[in-house]
Image (cartoon, rainbow, N blue to C red; front, side, top):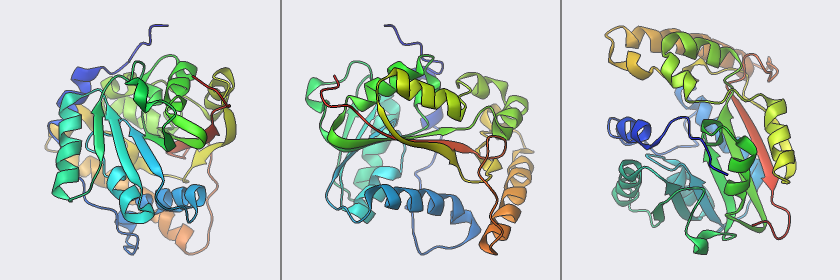
Length: 267
């Protein structure tokens, strides 16, 4: 089946060529600016526990700090895959800059090198599957990299919620390269791809900073937009730290996360 990519390599090449190197995650930084990464850290710790030395593949690894994270906190053997040559070059540069061993593959998710199939303990993506029209087919292709007994961990933005609503007004072109997947649709896609779904839930209560400025990032007022998106989220996070738990929900939660396993023999 021909998979329709709503973004395309030129979109990502342009995107990654204009972004600075990300900074490493520091788990002892309890500032609100680090609150989002701490939430990801807690969830990934729940998945991996005290497991060390596992092999981790990030799909859509361009300009990502996550390979470094898995190396730092889980002593993982790290790998990345992306179809943007610009993005892969930046990922290799990040590894070199931080002196981290790892392997970056520039390849198509749907026609990868065969020696990568069923090779990894954990395959993770932070915003990939929602860019392809056939979600089930994309999930199945991602799961083909997972070794028997391993996991597929998928994070996507909650575009049908408030994040997507704001994104339409900030830069409609960015919104249009996403499939607006709900929790229900993501669950159905896992079922259609015959994956063993362990859990699928909304992730975090709110994070309006998930909105991408897109073309507006070059506007002189973009800094005010980023401030307007950041402040309300941080106010909610302060309440959470004070013990007022805000339920994760389909309206305000910025992400959806799923954890799945491939059935034995998945190709």
